[in-house]
Length: 382
Image (cartoon, rainbow, N blue to C red; front, side, top):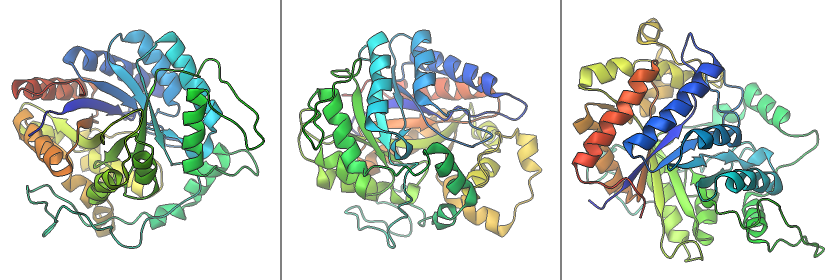
């Protein structure tokens, strides 16, 4: 197995019985602990209209976290470009870089814009999947359909509230090109007018494109020679399509001479498997709340989660996520992460962990870090 760095993806979850302020304080504390444990990166996700998630503005949380840490790289996983402009994005991260130079990753995603749907059929992959398994045993579950989410009134409301009346999202590829030009100081309007962002132009930020499939995001990242992050934790069925699609489109650039991939995974680690599974009990109801388009609920305590009455429809909504969550002892979870890395060829892994109690979440990251280091893996990206 090639060496692989570990990073953290934080959704800023709000546990039941807690407030958004509690969640933000916990996330900043967790970033400090992750820095101490040796993790390479700490990224914040962007989500809106979710009662159980406080991560509505990555840039704001990043500014607070940068002041509380000193060495760990911080980033967005990802800025939802569908309701933003290239200028506002470069200005925000330019301000961050001005105060904390060289520490930020600008992760960019397509979410929040015009619904794109998913390919009608899975894209072919070079890695064979037989009976839902790759040759090394990684589970690739059946494809999950997000069509019911695209027609959700709540999703439509979110788009209406995030966009100004009458506004239309810019084409994603054009928006990425505008961001690259504004950062480089080479932007020209179609009429030939220059634009220079201060602060922002020349900012020392590392660009990443986040994607779930081998479609537009993978193509944009590969064709422009940018780093790419695929999410096994959200869309495990399409992770191979995403990373292979990116590599097929890749062209060397001033940023990279070869493809660079990060893959995310949902994990819960404890001293033993039984304890880890108890801590992960709330994951199923929490995922269900997202996939029904109700919005993420506050993360339930184990006893609250056990009170949920499951229907067959509920189980169908969450089964792929439950089956691909890595839950167990440090050795068990490290084995599964190595399997994920081998199957995808990832250069980095991005770990996301949600438990009801903050101390359990911190302990999960600590146990995994010790096990990862014990196996001789570096925490720094090559």
